[in-house]
Length: 407
Ligand SMILES: *Cc1c(COP(=O)(O)O)cnc(C)c1O
Image 1 (cartoon, rainbow, N blue to C red):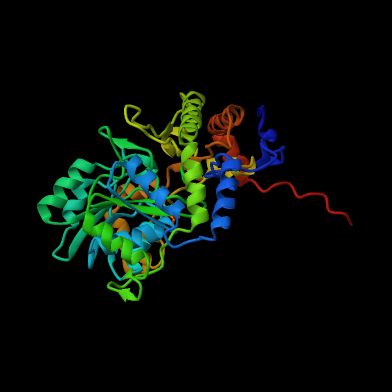
Image 2 (image 1 turned 135 degrees about the vertical axis):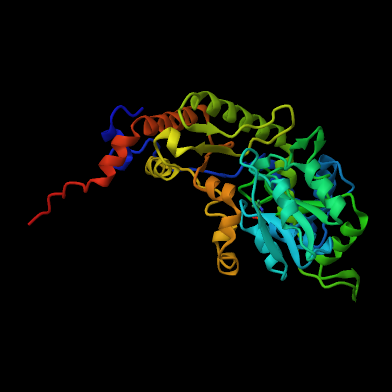
């Protein structure tokens, strides 16, 4: 507990945590089960190419997402690239800029132009009204991102896609295990793509999947994942190598067995943050719709500098020195990263909400590596920094008295 400014690590005090607390520290399930599976796959000498673990993993994911088809991939970016290609997108596709850069790269990588659309300030997901305005004769699709695991305005986006004859895909990298109006994420639009990266809610070390109810998209995605092969020596499509390895599927299956526990820990953590951060002026915790299923994987603060008297960046600086490695996801927005910054130098004028949000949001460490004690300390730090913001800013602006240098 910090009692005075001198106690803050930023002013030379001892950090609140001896070891760094990370955002996205992996959730790890039953180690013995994982090692058992790894032994099995080594005994079988079947390491990749649609082995039994990958097949089992695909069936489990499809069942959980409530869709007939799941194509597991080596990572989430490859799932996006293949999903985009299998759905036949080309020319221009409307995406948010307020997302991890892979959403945009998956398009640009195959010569498709990401057209950045602003988000709704309350939901942080695509604003359907803005999407309409960006449709041109070259537009072929929309990719919504279920940011922080909170579903997009799926109904409104679906209406637009239907009326304008566009494909609708979802980057569901954050949203595995969530639901929308009682239906599981994975079954919406023409296809959805998951990431099972180590930092995601469910991990397979690296991994991803395309899930869809569309048999044609599924068949194309399956071929594209494996160089376009349909049979021995028979290639029908341009393809890539997007296969998931057996060892990744072994991890994925093991993670699935602990799914309920991961959700429960995340949910407990989220509620402890809610209590601990209550009533801090200008600091709000992003809510989840708890009438739906959610994975609570992200604890996201919005810091309103006007109301809080402290900026997001100064809060982050104070926390980092205390060994709380809070992250500014998804600063500064895709449109301010290359190559998009050079391609679309005036994009920022079209993205006022994105520009505002990237200055305000801060993700805090949660997950199975974080417990109640740590959460209490993190909340106390945020409160202390907010309460003493003017003094902290003043003292940081002042040059530190020069240390005595030995002659
Ligand atoms: C993590 C992530 C991806 C990419 O997934 P990888 O498995 O890391 O390739 C794509 N989109 C979003 C929103 C992500 O957070």
